Image: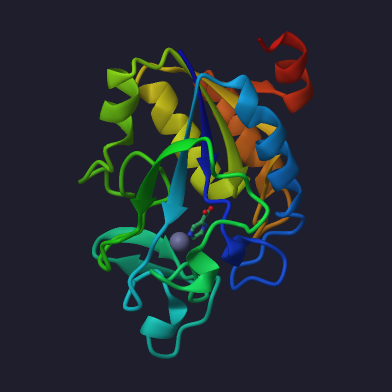
Length: 208
Ligand code: VGL
Ligand code: ZN
């Protein structure tokens, strides 16, 4: 079974949001167009408590973009974003969520961040997405959403590592690009790992 994973298509990652990704809103149309062509659709949702350790505001004198050690792991500090129950954490208004069978939240533990939809950044706890996909059973997974260089990348890498044939929908992703070129570097890293890069066009042309 072919599964589409929509990564963090949430208000705070859209233009005007707390952690705005340039052109992040452009992935919504891609997500809506692709969903009817998949057997199954799931979504991840960044879902932080207000005291989350990835927020610069929770570390005195620190600013977004800085690196700290957070309980033994290197952590980029972010603006306060995707706080549980906030408007910024909601899925984009125009995202069609009617086909999303299940939402996997991540980043709920204040002590550790979670870029991947499968595990926290220390791989200490699973979100349940891996077991869920194996149970379906998913054979191939297509990953798209926000942001290419963080949550999309780590979700795709973990999917591949868990044994799913993994595809990155390139035009369905946009990057944070803290440093210029992070977008391309992330895609190169995924390609090197064995993830195949495809376009939504290619999927629609061969879709059932
Ligand atoms: C993300 C930074 C912090 C993402 C989430 O969805 O890519 N990036 N939290
Ligand atoms: Zn986050």
